[in-house]
Amino acid sequence: MIEEYNNQDKAFRDISILLSKHTDRPISVRNGFNRGRSKIVKIDDKKLLLIYKREYFKTFTKKFKVFSDKNNITCVGESINVTTLKKALDANIDIIVFIHDDKLLCTNPKVIKRYCELHELVRVQHKTNYYYKCIEQEETYSFPVDILIEFDCSNLSGVLINDI
Image (tube, helix red, strand yellow):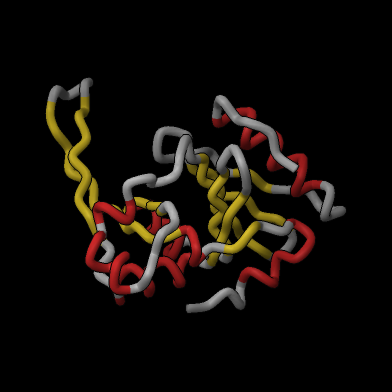
């Protein structure tokens, strides 16, 4: 279904082509944000947030060891920064699609927020801003990929019932 994406432009182009095969109406794509890794797409009556990911959160079970042990979580994780999730909620996004090399995973943004707040799966990442020569702190929601479902372009309404 999808091939290895070594850059976000190719990933977004291929996903747009895939989405266009499931509608007769034009697809509206807004300018990207979060360094171009996130784009809002409107298809029919649904608004999607496409997020290009270079890799999974492979150390999720180590970073959230108590949670993982208590809930028998053994899978890799996924994450979204709080600012991006807030934009998704404010824009009434129906579906967030995480674009990975091996698959497209998705859920409703409210599911992520509720799940992460319920289980206290919030972390602060320290990122170096080389332009301003400073360390920035980015608050991030992290969660096991098991709460996501595989994205199905032909059934966009099916994602909306994916609830925790």
